[in-house]
Image 1 (tube, each protein chain N blue to C red):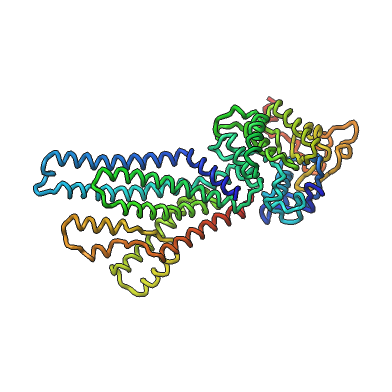
Image 2: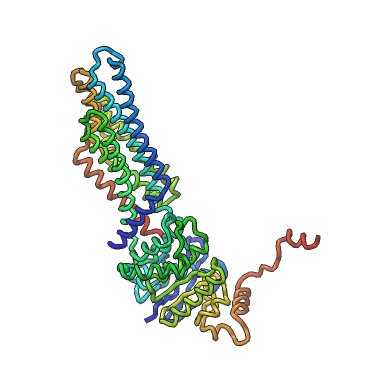
Length: 291
Length: 255
């Protein structure tokens, strides 16, 4: 236990000093502030024109529209930066120790390979949660510039983002113990973002009734539950409903049905299994590794 | 009980490769300094890595304080300074020692005393840079520092002075003498035969993974000769001769 805590603690210290993570964090943080302030400046400019450039435009509705636009962009940006950070952590947390020879000195100490793997994974997960959490907190602060009402969506989206990026990070960590870390990142990207992304997308098309073929549907149902698929928060649904409400159009169930629904307990249980599976792969690779 | 006991140890890295270590047997007692000598690729580092639990033997057994070195508890009393050591690149020397002190399970009192003293011994007490900015010699000194941090009963030194300056080498010799006197067993891998002759009681000379000669210094080195002569003679008798210089060198000589 002490060994795992020591490994975890110094993994965090090391990651906090890696420039690539700092660069991603600064870019993400600066991007969120610029986006929020930019939209607010746009609002101020438009409101100073008196009529928002068009007759009968309600200032409150316009502010709400800007907030929706901001939240939409920020959720996308968070997703991209979360993924970049997950790749950066996954590529460096274990790989450099194994390749540089630092592992020789570490493994010669009275620490088990399990404690080493657990400490590395724990440190990496904490770093990921801390960085994504800080970006989410910053987003929440920028949201004070607007009317509010979508705070719950942000919390859910940040939680789903951490959960999804954690899986990507574990895949990269596991692969980087077997192969070069750049190759590991490419393989993980192809596996998680391309192959499983396509499977999840096609599965969604069947679910929403866009495609109808029972045999193919059955195949994609099975594939969907074989590959790790992303957890979805209530945010996409919340945003869609808010946009429909803002447009004063009647609620369109067909449009809402096309929006991914929030993940249920089955998806969460599957995510837990996937996390344990890839964490186990990391341990297995570290245990077999002769340095 | 022997500190280290190695019996008929064999190891190869791929199935088609020749044995890197082939039937090596020896034992190391408390307070004894044992020198493993051999040319490059003779299997010295593979042997010490198997003793340190870093490599798994294909055949034979290794006992470290009577246990399998693969178990963490058996490594508690062992200090290992690897050849060409490296450490997490974004930590400082003091942090590396604190990290390793945690892995050794040292309490706060021991850490506060031992870490500054060990850093001072290694000449790194004023060093504030990250490991990635360290020279090879500084890493080597830190490698020795981390190996003695836990006050081990067995100290394994794999080419410990290869990158050290003469003062550093003298400090390491003094350290080995002092530890030997206090009952610590030393296993030393080195190409510096004069150094081995000074500090080791027993030596084994290896080539191609096999022990060619083993015994006390007096048994291996007859009176009036030195370890280097014996070593060169043994190795040359057991390996193909390479007495031809490259042709481009001899051509230059003619001109």
